Length: 140
Image 1 (spheres, one colour):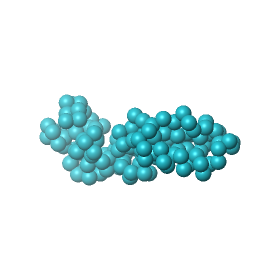
Image 2: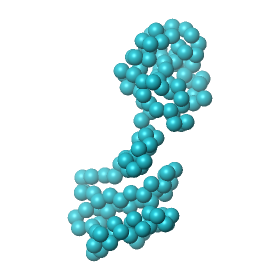
Image 3: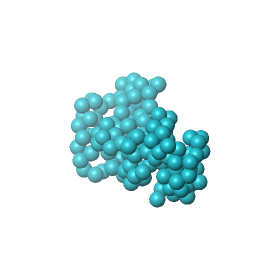
Image 4: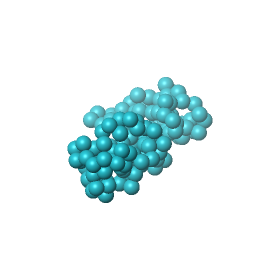
């Protein structure tokens, strides 16, 4: 069984090389499951290594976020009820596209700067659109 320091040292060296292969790493270390990734398939190619007890799992998105602080890896796209209510009240129930009044239930929260363009899911980037306008807008 390899020493954990050797495993970690090899991981650090390989993470700087661009080599994405993980087959040289053991599947287990002592009583822990060892998981390794060099970011294959991830836009940022953020390498990570996990030592997991049987009841634990590696969560996609968490490691790249911790390392880069870029919220796009967390996939938090839904506005919470408080943000929706605040935007609705600020707009006085008026859809920002068609300028008609709707009850809150007839509206949907929308990213002013689209999420796919780096727009954050926060109160400052939230607007309420009627369902029809939101469907027509669809990421534009």
